[in-house]
Length: 411
Image (tube, rainbow, N blue to C red):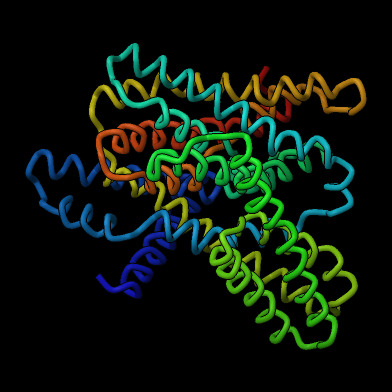
């Protein structure tokens, strides 16, 4: 199926599901779209199982033709990260820089290790054997909170400003760090490269620090260009060029595109917004990127819901996924709680911050995209099913209850 036809189908489904959710279900838009997509996918599976309508094979083949990994990591993610970073106050972020830095690095590494060990124990209990490197890969891909999912919930959760900044800042940066960790273990799996302190530091410096420097560079160049013109059509085009061209160039240079775009977005959203744009440009730029954010969010959550058509739902994998949900939450609780407890002597935190950040650590499309990049085989099928179950629980259960937890209705 041609790309334009696939895009037309996805936009149409997202629009129809959004309408149905708005009229009848009344959940947050992205969650409602994903829920309807899951129900539709399950309906197709049941119709095929009872031989009522033979559309499952066609639908499954269609969605297998969509490369979720490339679509998200090398397409949609740059737009979503830029749109999110554009509205983050840089002064607030700098104020909490040490907390965000620790949660985006140390917590990701600790969570990766804890999840790997706990997942290995769960799989051993069920009787599923696979090399430990796969559990480390699973730990890396499930460790980051998804900025797309998290920031969508924070918009309506009513969290304290300091807590919102910490959660949003962590989610914007930890996915880039987690991808670096994932690539490190992926190299071990596919190339037989050993993990040494030297190559770990080298990869981190190249990917993460390289992404920061590159993001500042392209962001500053874009800022200077924005400052030299006063035409909102041109300035919106420049922002698009920054996102698309900047991410593609970062990818070609083998540095972290996500981190680069977040840094560039923060620069344009703060210094660029107030020093390089007129009120008219600011208004049009915000409206444009809010619309892009909403459309891509809708399509992304639709894709997550439809991915059930390509997931192998075997009983052992299903059981493993259900057991790993509390394991992932426990790892999140420890990896977030430990540094917060250690930092409490010199940093002020909101009440119940560990509980809120644990439950508010939503997983989303990034985890699904990373697991789909694994080499084909039984290990990939097992981890895909487990990842999908964790992501669905995270978005539907945690996403729908975090607002009540923040407001104090859940204890």
